[in-house]
Image (cartoon, rainbow, N blue to C red; front, top):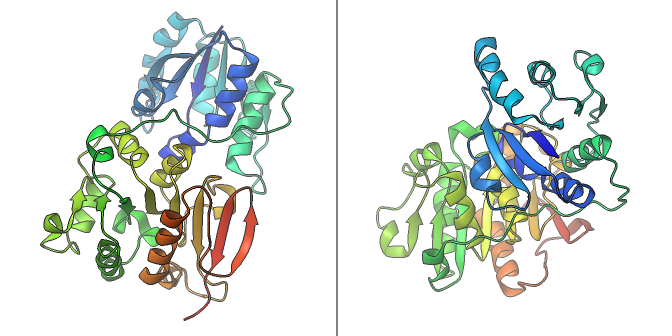
Length: 343
């Protein structure tokens, strides 16, 4: 059996489909999975079990670009399609591609074209929604959600350096109100450097540009390595997999760290989604802004560098478990959420 998987558009969401993939593997151990979405799918899933291949989705292009893939989809003779990202064009193309079974999120414009699906609920974690889509297509009979996991991966050069190895991704203007403020970012890097070991600044070219404005001039002499803008998504995953701790805002790197079983410190500002619906379920400390803060732009500013360093030290000192250094508001499934109080 050959199954086409329309992956989400963003890296973090794509990582969150891995429990759904595991359910499908258990139910259909001989199936071949093809990933239809971003170019990074091959880098993320190329070494995974049951990988068949990847198709680059014509996201943001017109109908002509969609229809140009029709011949390729028909030629692969897919037995089913599971649309983790369900847009009307994707459903129509799956139908025109002669895929006999199409599963996706039930919406007003897709309801009549789907064979089965699940309605989206803002009260449900996104990981659960993706897993329920897989279950709607091929009933697994499972009652327990598999963990979010990618195959272990490392960068041998980074892994060979003395520890601790701390990855950092703080964003820039392109991350909106999720980004950590530049002056506070500079202070954080200075305090992290005091721990010793190596600090790796990660991200894309926009993260690199943003960081260039606040990085200390002597950063290379302080064992601060700038990898932002210098890796592919696969290279980013290899780098994160080599870290002892990952410090990051709410972005794809956070979900990669969780999926690669790397302890993380999550800096939660004002995001694009409710954090409880996308929150990683891995070994980490989630630093949340105080509830009384009125203005969205002040949320990320409430997370002081000293609090972040304390969280990093806690994870380094207890690699097999987690220790919150502030009052714990929520604690379940190996997760610690820290609701910061005013200083």
